[in-house]
Length: 115
Length: 157
Image 1 (cartoon, rainbow over the protein chains, first blue to last red):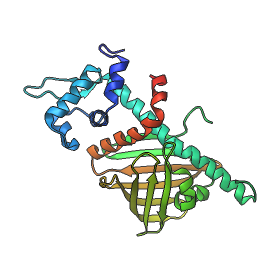
Image 2: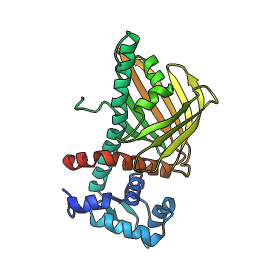
Image 3: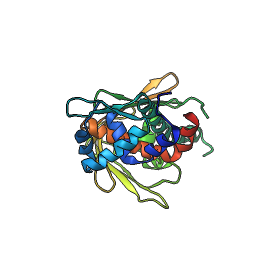
Image 4: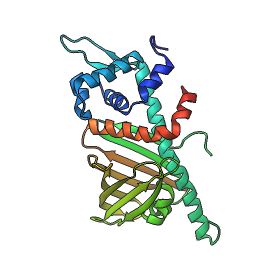
């Protein structure tokens, strides 16, 4: 387990849609605060505040590049993204489990009985 | 109930999302379940508690569709779009936007149904306008999945 990670602060960090959006953006690669603020209709200080929470939770790390401080996902952050994708799969899977039942009913309907 | 989910979801390149799922039914049946409003209303519902009171689906090139979802306690939303290409039982290409109520960027979706053993392999390939839109879409989808799956995540971590 990566240093600085604790489950409670990770969950608190994940409980906010903007922060989840930031992680999803960082999953595509390193980004500066400016780049992160762009899709969110939020001020830079507001984004920085969210980043602070994500960094404290051990999900995001920063690098120093001259005057820039690009952020990227930590190993923990990457794992968290994987968990999210797993959840999205589960949400879709719920639909398709229902569809399995609809298909089974169509099949038995075409054989003439049951619903 | 399966212990392993038979669904795959992955990102591809900068702007694609690809979903695959196997069904124990013919491509004809799976295709019908994706185009017949009466059937769609039974399964395309997301987390528990949601219903689809409006389901319009005119599956032919240039035809429109509109799906409206409702929940007893939450604001409803809808997805509307247009079919670009329709090959009965094997392929549907459409564009869609979600209205929350503001429209999301356009999502281009190609859905294929192929015979796979005695069932069907469905492959959905979504193309978003850019990587940021895809990131936003994945994170909003995660929001919805989160409601139903938060407890499960805790046990997984």
